[in-house]
Length: 322
Length: 139
Ligand code: SF4
Ligand code: SF4
Ligand code: FES
Image (cartoon, rainbow over all chains, first blue to last red; front, side):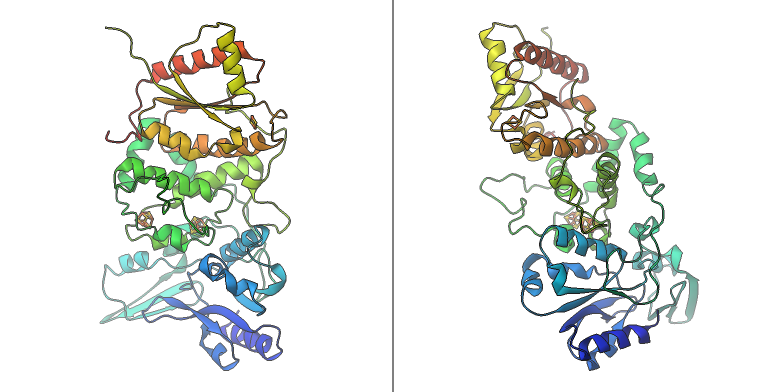
């Protein structure tokens, strides 16, 4: 895929009247960043880009307080990476989005860059220019220039991702690759499972006691769209507001249960966290259970019911007292 | 000194397990007095927050019980609940809550004896692991 192809495709969609608006990514103001852009005329399409800085999961524009966007009569196109497409599929199966009204445009993802890792590569020096060619990243600053493989600086969520290309699309720019095997996708979870109970609790305490309960992880999540979130409810108040570890852990346990069978492991929550908490470990644990117990992988099929809204009568119930 | 006695929250569905508890009672069966019962319409009504709130506010263990699969008064409430618990239980264990701290069972209205057995078993299990420390408020 070239940026030119991307722009031309979007231009023709607009001029042929197939869509009224395309949501995509444009260059951000800082090196190594991108920003969502809303393209409603062919000229504007020239601001579109796609590279490893395109972290945002644009499916959020169809949920939360922006639901109206998907409900009015406009035909909307949206650019998606693999994980973003799974969010869309989930939201379609949850009847938040009408499949007919959205034109899904897949772009080939090679992982999105984690700028903290890049900054680490240059020992915290100021980066003035960032470029990537889908395999290598080059950064420039005052008196330095460094090139390294993209794989060394992609987000943790991308390291184990086996569905980098859209699972559902109307058109794909370039060629969509088949999903890989997820046999080893949960190695980190399995490692953690091996620790004893006490040790796991200590590690959790250590990791999560940094949480300042800003709820950025919830706000950014394309699967979190309740009108009133349980953390904002105060009558009854289900969840304590204190920074005590018990309140924080309960928030995170419930957050994970609320996105059980709904989390697409896009990593947006982890990237949004100002305290650098490794949030995906819990999300992944839940995703692994959902996969192993119910044979369900979130957002991979329009005909699949979300796992937690579904059941089989003769299901494994090994955890129920005999 | 007398033996430490755990406090156990028992969340029971109205149509089966609560009636099972009732049967155990009217049949004068003996079981440990450690449980405090909360009656809910169906196991499908059990929000994981009930369980976590219980542990947070001083219960040493939680037992949730509903109708056997196929017997739910609302047809599928317990099937949906089962999926919820199937994720909740391993997740709680993952973050370091002892496996026996939270338990699930199916008890019908006719199983008074089974109710007494389950409560005895859960009480024994929780005595073994001792007072709840993790997730407890002010701990
Ligand atoms: S919980 Fe995190 S990883 Fe999962 S869908 Fe939401 S933002 Fe993405
Ligand atoms: S974004 Fe991070 S600090 Fe904020 S609530 Fe979520 S985990 Fe806590
Ligand atoms: S009524 Fe007993 S589990 Fe639903």
